[in-house]
Image 1 (tube, rainbow, N blue to C red):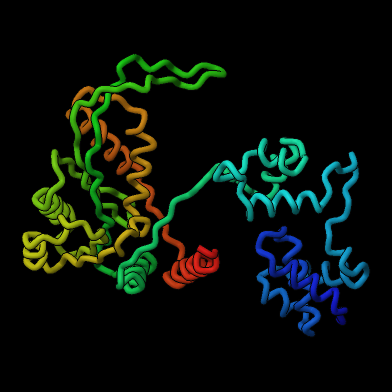
Image 2 (cartoon, rainbow, N blue to C red; image 1 turned 60 degrees about the vertical axis):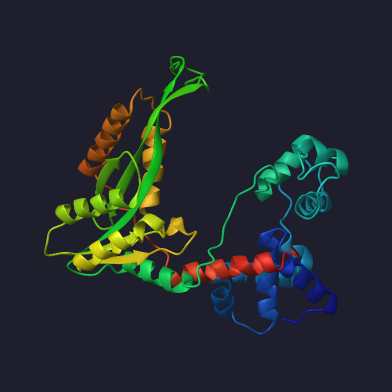
Length: 353
């Protein structure tokens, strides 16, 4: 396949531009690969797509050149927004900000570009753009980050024989809260409603150990969360796990997990092997996923007039979970995680900040 200089420039622009339609970028990469003399199978393997898709867009380009890569017009009402206007909406949303705000709204962008708010909204939805949202991220600065990720993920994907792997952490300062007015039940067309005001009746701290294989949870509730409470929880684990099994603990870097008393206890119990997650990497500990379910399904909308009532509900929820445990299955390898983080760091470095 032979390309003119103009065609190659346009295809490379479409393929390189991260903020253009990704379907068009993929079609451009297919044609560029074909122009290199690659076979359909080789192009498909390079781009991670099917050979049939490569053949389709290669043939379309041969027949119609650049126009063949653009989606064909669909039957029905004629379009009122052109491709150029769609691209302007997308690029303006991604590359510019309004003068008096940190992000665009449908109203401000429609006024800026002379379009209707509904047109802007449709384009945003089509391209998955949500200027009003912002997600927060944090990269670990642990100098042993790579080694710790490989260690923990290795346990998830290939747990040792004659051993139990436990994901351990504490959920501290769980508040016993009671609403100052009765909760109004859900009705057709009306969600459940609760007053914003509440009364505090104390706090409790939950230590939990999630069995990687069975999904069962060992839980222990305490009034505080110091090293002495963590030591008691280790003793609870020691009593619960059969003596002939080694115990691999996946825990974070909290100071209460590294005190001299804890180190001394671990030395006296050699079947316990500790695996620390990297700092600022709680996502690597599967028990955090379980804490999320506990919060969403039991704690967030519950009311408790005492710590005793709170603890009773938590114990009941753990018992119910253990009657039908659901182990979480880790799927990503350490290499996949590290490659993903490397790509993200590259994006950050190229962002101009």
